[in-house]
Image 1 (cartoon, rainbow, N blue to C red):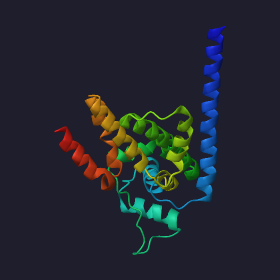
Image 2 (image 1 turned 180 degrees about the vertical axis):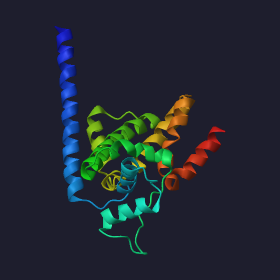
Image 3 (image 1 turned 30 degrees about the vertical axis):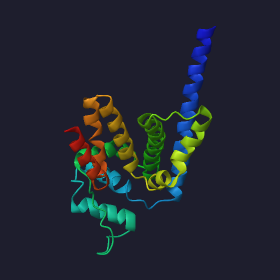
Image 4 (image 1 turned 60 degrees about the horizontal axis):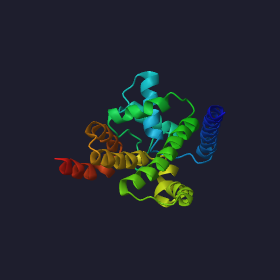
Length: 210
């Protein structure tokens, strides 16, 4: 009987997780349709689609002009953002699975869902890094706060990959502390999503490791 109960519990948890993910994707899609205009996801997503659809260099002028026409409805003026891809191509590969989705709002919704999961994981890993063990009754408050506080909501609202960077850095510090150097080296790649933000910290981590 206990085995059947465990199976039913596992099935219920899977269904619950799928329902939560489905609700997140649905609500994020509605949000993306009502609040277009972000650039942090749009530019690399469209650059990846341009590469997959036409085989064009995602860093080329035609790729940027395509982004301008879709974003502005025309070519950008001199004082406007030219919407050129500015991240290394190995990092751009992370956007390729989302570029397979033709609907921008849905693709952004899936990206935002991954960001929300990353925010929750970041909260748990931060607790592990610091060694703080709050009461279980406080955990829901902590998780809600990790998503809705200003430094969580603003990057989420802008669909910014900096959330993945923060998660990778916390994971990097944990793996270095535990002596898992191979995984630490793999996580060190992700901060190159935003070298202008995490570059200096990565240099300090290199110095510390050496």
